[in-house]
Length: 344
Image (tube, rainbow, N blue to C red; front, side, top):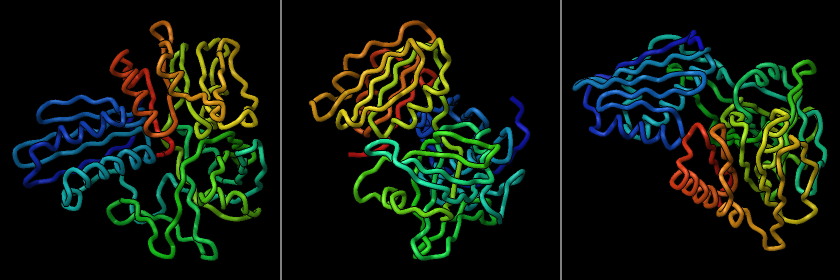
C-alpha cells in the first residue's frame, strides 16, 4: 500500500523515562500492530504508519498515510495519547508536512434527515441525505459518528485550528456525539441509513423519535470497526451490536462458516438476519434467563487457522470474553475484535 502523505515533528527537551513503553501500551490496548525497542516505536494501522524515535534530548515523530484523511485520523489519535502520557509535549512540537489547518476537519461533513421509520420493537432506522456518501462508502470502517446540535440553536461545527487539531464547540453550542453503524450506503443517490437502538432518556433516542425531514446533523467517519477477516468465525453480541453484526453478515462470503450468539430482551426482538448458509444463529432471550456470557464462557473456538472471534456488548462481558479468548486460546489482534458498546 502506497503512503502518499506524510508529516514529521521534533520535540527537544526533557521526556518521561517511560514515554515509549507508555505509548506502546496504549497502542496494544487498542489492538494495533506494534514494534517496540527501548528507544523506538512503530505503530501500523491499515492506512497509516507512525514511527517514534527517542534520543537522550529529543523525540522525533514520522507519520505516513495513504491520504490526507488517514494522516489526520492517526495524527489525532497520536496527539490524544501524547496529551495523556506527556502533558505539554504536544504544544512544544514543531509539525511539518501534509497537515490540514484552519478549516473543516477532513473526515467531517453534514447531512440532512430524509426520514425515520421503525424496523423492530426497539430500533428506528434513520435515512440521511449526504453529499459525501461516496467518500463514506469508500473508506475503511463500519462505524461513523453523528453530531447533534442543541435544539433551537444554529449549529456550530468542529474546526481545525492552526496546529491542525480538531476544536469542538463548547458551552451552549456543545454537540452531542454518538457512534453508529452504517446499514446501507447509496453513493449514487447520495444517502445512507443507520439504526438507533432505543433506550429511555438517551439523547440520540429522543432525537430519532422527533427528527423532522430537513434537519441538519454533523457526520464524521468512517471510523473504527473494520470488517473481520477469517472464514471460520464466532460472532457474539447483544442488541446494541445487532446493526454491526447485520452489516458483517451482509458482507460475508457465501462459504463463510461459524456461529452467531445474539442476546436480546424478549422474543419480540428476534428479527430476520440474512447470513451465509453455514453460519449457525442462536437467539438468547434475556427475560427467559438466557445470557450471552453463559454461552461465551463455554463456546468452542472456530476451527482451522483462518479463524476470527468478534465480540461486542457491555464493558464487563467484553472484558471477560477478551480475557478468555486472549489468555486461554492465544487469539491475537489479527484474529479477534473485542469492543464494548455500552457500560453498565
